Image (cartoon, rainbow, N blue to C red; front, side, top):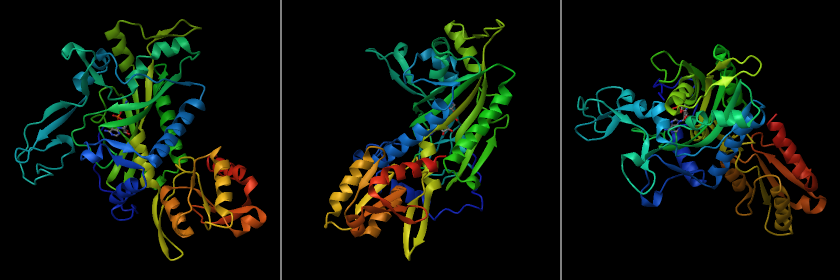
Length: 451
Ligand code: GAP
């Protein structure tokens, strides 16, 4: 949960004011909006618009494919957000999921003490006005049922991991898995963060993609390394720039209450090196705690030897919204093309919200009709956008900003010989392809980008 506050490395080559530009692009193009904006917004909650929801869905699907579908040793679950309140007692969250909160006596703004750089209030500038720190629990509480008293308190889960731990036995008994194996889950998590900020980096409602890998004690350290390496390879496969990626192993004073070892994957965002994924060796902390609190055995019995043990757990935990922000910062470029400037999102084609845009060069001579036919055909296999308004150059720019990898233009030659131009977002190269072969051609190009 902690961030390093180191200054960005000199190698950083972001355009000036990138965060402002990203926030503006996200709103203008329908990636991300402030929640409840017409009411003035609600703090640190964001809504995804038409392009954002596609991007997020593609990232979620890529993670699920990597972690579940391509593996025979990981199963998926989808647990409820509301869980028995004892889950959070056993996990240590009721007692220990806190941040130190201080208040400025002058302006009454509240801050996380561990994120303050000095005794000067970042809001009003007064020095030495902070109150003593008190521990503030980050879990959102609500009530279950008709009575609003302390016996009815339930929590909105602050992590998805516990939904996996409490289902360990169910999955073991209903699947054919043997140790070592994992359980993966994607879902919403909620934290009443004291100092949210930096757009969607730290929010109060967010989505996590977590996997708990259950192993025999003694093999945990090797598995920790295996999962660390797999996770690094995966984020690189999405096109994450290596010069903005680093590993941050936790020192003993940084470890969460449940962890024996931990390493963060960090990305150099415009506001510094920041964690976007954590890999933890959680030992048998959680299963032991749930076993003790629930009274239900959560051990594993090895079939051939009869040996019994409570497994150790290697966890990989990545924030979906935070990864989307990292991918947007990673993809954003400003360039000069033929004397004109363009903003381009070089998103990995498999993550791009729209795969292909179809344009008739002009709104006559049968071109719109042909372009509509092509659009309809492509829609059977990919997300497509049809655009006939404005100059062709402006239409290209609009798609560059949305990260669309291919733009298809129907022109005079199409009417004559049935070929269209396909323009590549990154190389700007244009090739002519017979319209009848276009869908297969694009599918092959998209698959090629993913191999
Ligand atoms: N189950 C372990 C766990 O929850 P964490 O380091 O607290 O560990 C894991 O969170 C990931 O969840 C982080 O690396 C980050 O990507 C994401 N995350 C955590 N708090 C967040 C917040 N307030 N807003 C957005 N993402 C958050």
